[in-house]
Image 1 (tube, rainbow, N blue to C red):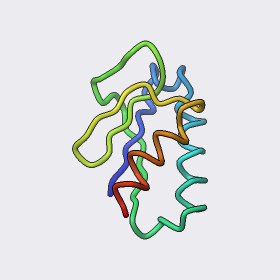
Image 2 (tube, rainbow, N blue to C red; image 1 turned 120 degrees about the vertical axis):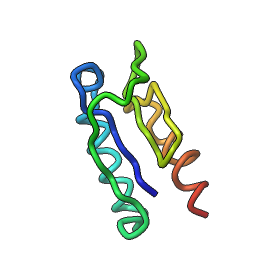
Image 3 (cartoon, helix red, strand yellow; image 1 turned 60 degrees about the vertical axis):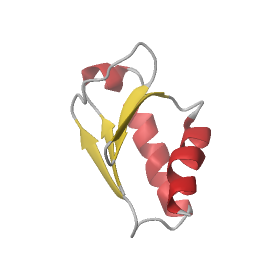
Length: 82
């Protein structure tokens, strides 16, 4: 699984640095280092008013925030890797 997190200027202002850190921690805590490649990306082209844009393989998600991160990770990462 390849996860790309937008670190472009718009997402940076919306907290992409914190979201990247949360992904790194969650991947490590769940022992997923060998199953996930985490990468930064400049604009993915789906900017919105709230949160960070993330691409997981071919799927693009918008609005990821520190507040909804845990739910997002559980639904879109852990459940898909089961």
